[in-house]
Amino acid sequence: AQSVTQLGSHVSVSEGALVLLRCNYSSSVPPYLFWYVQYPNQGLQLLLKYTSAATLVKGINGFEAEFKKSETSFHLTKPSAHMSDAAEYFCAVTKPGNTPLVFGKGTRLSVIA
Amino acid sequence: DGGITQSPKYLFRKEGQNVTLSCEQNLNHDAMYWYRQDPGQGLRLIYYSQIVNDFQKGDIAEGYSVSREKKESFPLTVTSAQKNPTAFYLCASSTGTGSSYEQYFGPGTRLTVT
Image 1 (cartoon, chains in turn yellow, cyan):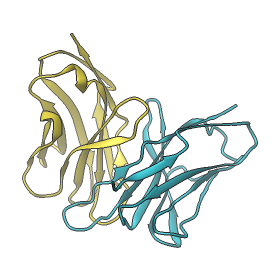
Image 2 (cartoon, rainbow over the protein chains, first blue to last red):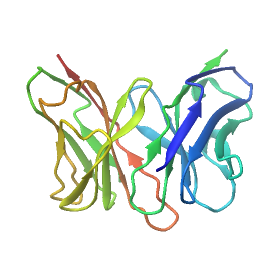
Image 3 (tube, helix red, strand yellow):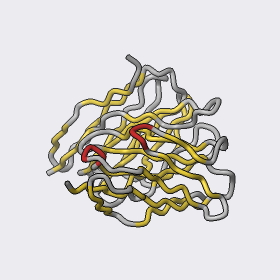
Image 4 (cartoon, rainbow over the protein chains, first blue to last red):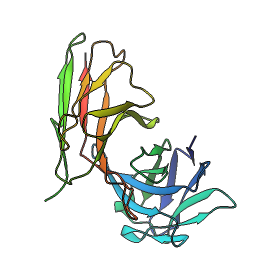
């Protein structure tokens, strides 16, 4: 079975500071990993995905994530936080094919001016 | 524009009533999914369908039913048997081919049952 653990339900950073949102996964097969962002009362928008190509993945809005198999991690980073980054972020895992995503519980990011 | 439509955005019902949430996609995706979102719980899978006329239960299917008569449509019925139906419901679709595999999400329906 696959699972995702997101460390920290709430992360607060100052504007301009580094953003680091942690995600660890468990999977019996090579995983496909995703980060999604959700703004209040909206659906989820894909930030970036890892599908067994390059281990460092760049996404939209300046975010990136690195797949580390030895650590079973897929942490999301952004060098400099912007006020517009305040949202909820979800890490998810799946396997090839039309199989459902398994989501972490989410991390709410607050950005302080 | 291609995408996923969920209607309505907000839905209010009295306890004991069944209610159907709409989900339509024009992305030509084979697979569709329903998730339920509660604060602090992440997204939990209710049902999914990989092809027309076939669907599978997810982790929290009790009190819900679905149909998949057309590729474009995957309505979810919240029955009176669902003990705590108030939640935010998200529909998604995917094609699962090539290097894709990500799911595309609709804007969600917030259901309130009183």
